Amino acid sequence: MASTSMRGMRLGAQTIENEIGVTYADKTKHEYICANGHSNDVVFAADAELPEFWQCRKCSELGALVVDGKHVALESKSDRPGRSHLEMLLERRTKEELEEILKERIAYIRARRAHGKAEI
Ligand SMILES: [Zn+2]
Image 1 (spheres, rainbow, N blue to C red):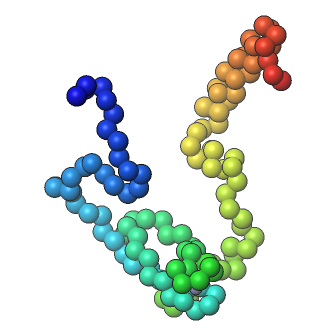
Image 2 (cartoon, helix red, strand yellow):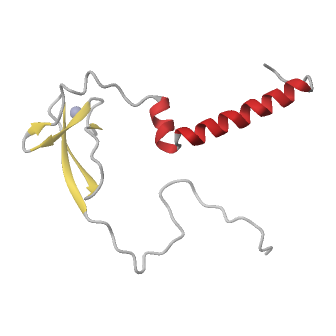
């Protein structure tokens, strides 16, 4: 078989790595309770940042994280919508990187325009 061929894998949580010598991360179990009172135990790595909400497995409601018998930050959540596209972008790239990319893009568009090929 040619050495350049690609090996296919099913999509999903499979890996070709074997498990010998692997140390598993510590895990902790957390409870999420939905508006219908269903309790959902969810296991996270011990050092994972816990989401405040988790989809209930028994109904379509969102379960809220419960710590010491209390819902965590249910009220304060309402005035804080999810992260914007810009916030997510800024987590991946610095402003300097983004300005560099913008400059490159503008130069590219100007060059295309100069040749009468630009679409905008
Ligand atoms: Zn539920």
